[in-house]
Amino acid sequence: MAVTVTFHGACGTVTGACFEVRTGSSAVLIDCGMFQGTKTIKALNYGAFPFTPASINAVVLTHAHVDHCGLIPKLTVAGFAGNVFATPGTGDLLTYVLPDSGYIQETEVDRLNRRNRQRGIKAVEPIYTREIAEASLRRIRPKPYDSWFEPAPGIAARFWDAGHILGSASVELRIDDGAGKPPITLLFSGDVGPGDKAFQSEPTAPRDVDFVVMESTYGDRVRARRTNEQRRHILAKELHAALRRGGLILIPAFAIERTQELLFDFDALFDSGQLPKLPVFVDSPLAIRATEVFGKHLHAATMTNGTHAFKRDNLHFVEAVEDSKKLNRLRGGAIVMAGSGMCDAGRIRHHLKAHLGQPDTTVILVGYQAPGTLGRLLHGGQSMVRIHGEEIAVAATIRMLDEYSGHADQRRLVAWLKDRLPVRHDVFLVHGEDGARDTLGAELGRAGIERRRIRLPVMGETVKLSKKDGARTVRVRAGVDIAAAERDWHNLYAQTTLALKQKLSGLRRDEDRAALLRQVSSVLAPPTKGKSRRKN
Image 1 (tube, rainbow, N blue to C red):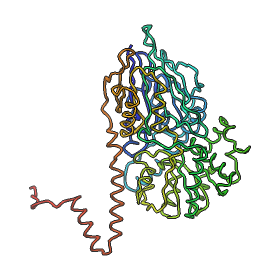
Image 2 (cartoon, rainbow, N blue to C red; image 1 turned 90 degrees about the horizontal axis):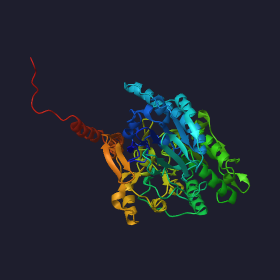
Image 3 (cartoon, one colour; image 1 turned 45 degrees about the horizontal axis):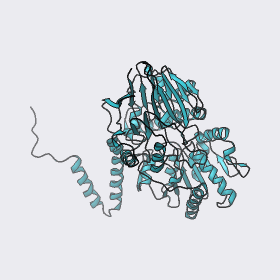
Image 4 (cartoon, helix red, strand yellow; image 1 turned 120 degrees about the vertical axis):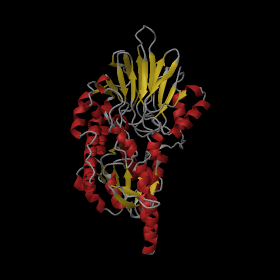
């Protein structure tokens, strides 16, 4: 009986995780995530699935970030009728994450369609609605760590703590080939935690497997190791510098784990006197619900000095849209944390729109920024950006705090894989940009992993697994060029139009502006040579 794995996402990019494991009689998806980044990358969310959803027996989720779970509602509408297996923590988070994703899509599409109507462009539909997302929650089946279950006939699965966020897991599979032989064993790392997070332990996973599918987000980066106290000191230093600038402090925070980690550290800094007790506003309904889930699962861990880190007089949870809008009247001496963490959607975009043009504003990025996202553009030093179709000058100070990353760096990833040895056959590097995958692959080679066994699958690649012979590529589906999609002409277009506007504004005379526009026009519509010939 043939056993295959098809890589439907997270190959050459850090989003869209979706891996199809298929036998002669069963099929299971490990994750079913949403693509994030450039418009070309995000367009992949709208197309038909490259497999028949009704043929999938089950989905096994590694964790509740939308790039791993965000297309489950779409999958159910497309015909999937199986169960979604997740840890209890992930299951609780999904009850808020998926409906919130549907709501954001509805509101973002509504705003886009209002602009499209003005331009005479056809209206678009959301990938799914909040109602569809809520209906998909009925398929969730919680399973504890370190306990075998059977998501599909002939396929056994077990969760291991990945140390990434609340409920995150690596997934171990045992696949019976039906011929009485030893099972094929696979390990999907999911997102591997760094091992020094406030709420998470060191990641765990089994040794001695046949194949490993491993994330590589920071495969090209080595971070300095920080204690909790060192991390808080760095945070306090950034916040004091922001307070001296005098403006608002905006933190585009990932709603799950990152927001709660920051609240925990704020609490410690306030209580120790390292930071004045300035008001903190959590402006994200999803982050608020996620914080409640953290309080349920990690009550003892969220206590500092006998008080609850999520319950303070200077901590304010903002749910209503009107209350969120009022925050834009603030001018300084406050922290506003709002989703999304990559500035790609949600309420943070409204706050950035209102405050990026003010030189006393500080924006602190606290996690990975996918290519093409607004967060990546800000981190890259763009002087002008577009938000909701409007051009916004960037005068604010943009800072990056990598100490809060939820991903293992290169050194930790290499150590994680070495702890899994022996791995009898191939290691597939996924969930990383190509540069990170290449660098990690080379580093794994230096660590003693045979280079020929380190594979960098492409989107749509199907490999056949053999207990005896390892993995062999059997087909590659024609698909998107991820590298080209992440360069994306939409961002280049926006940058070009903004640059042209800046150039025109910098010229002193109307004659010079007209001359520049004529040069641009000559490229767009070069004059024809000779006289046109009229047809009779």
